[in-house]
Length: 197
Image 1 (cartoon, helix red, strand yellow):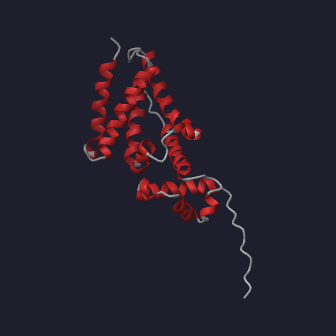
Image 2 (image 1 turned 90 degrees about the vertical axis):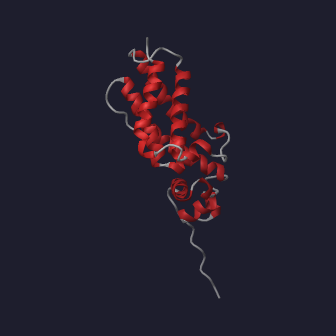
Image 3 (image 1 turned 180 degrees about the vertical axis):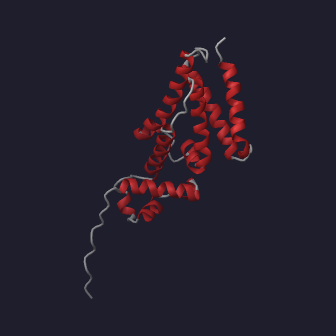
């Protein structure tokens, strides 16, 4: 019995479709549910087709992480003083983590991507988040709201504080219902420690 030749599969944006499918898998099943095979199936393509865009699972995970960091870096800032805008960046960080818990855990804890330097797009996207925090700190220092400590050191401090708060909330160690109040308390204490004297 003769069979008709299989038509070639055409997909105008396969890479983006795979990243979207992978992101949906992370949201639904957590990072452990993400495989290249599952992402390919969800995107409606063969496993082999996925390898044309991603060499391995780590490459796909890095692309999903980069997408998350890009979203985090692009959250609009509130109006107000430089310190108020910096607080807005901190709140955006917290809101992103609570709205995207599985993605957040992947972004900050994936064993599949141990070295950011191996994935330039990911490294650049992550750097934009830290550059935004650093720019906010510089502006608050220039306005006299924060003391002129080394910006890199203060960026590290604020990143650690916000990541610690997010991690405890996501782990259930702190009540999510109190997230706004806890964030305000933490930021107020950091402000007092860093305030210009």
